[in-house]
Image (cartoon, rainbow, N blue to C red; front, side):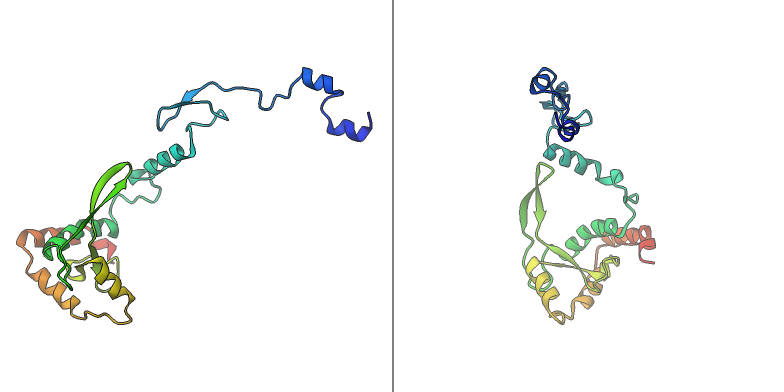
Length: 191
């Protein structure tokens, strides 16, 4: 056999090759259960723990929620403040769009395998600062009015700021107390 072929070949003859199959691909790992769905599968490597990419992605999504996320900050963020203020603002505005007076509508969405009902209403930051979640800076808008506001060069409703201040002043005492306690809790986020 020529020397060049000899270096490229693992076996001296084709008969020797069939008598001694390559180790790669011949080892069979035992079946095991997928850690996400529990289905039995034969892993390609000893490190495989999920039967498919979908199961792997779903497991990753569950691991990254809440405290599992490396960027989780104990829920003390302006986003948490906004999530807490949103229902107060919707109730204050009687669950109607403050510009066109359209009533709140709902859609059904599927999240993490569960069907949920979601509102189509948006809570708008009047001063465009998402960190400022005071009741005086938030108003309820339907999706159409919210889009019109953001697509316009100047706001079509310059009275929104005054409306929010007046509506916040006339909130029920329970809602005012809740808004005040939330503002005190998250005051470090506005500094």
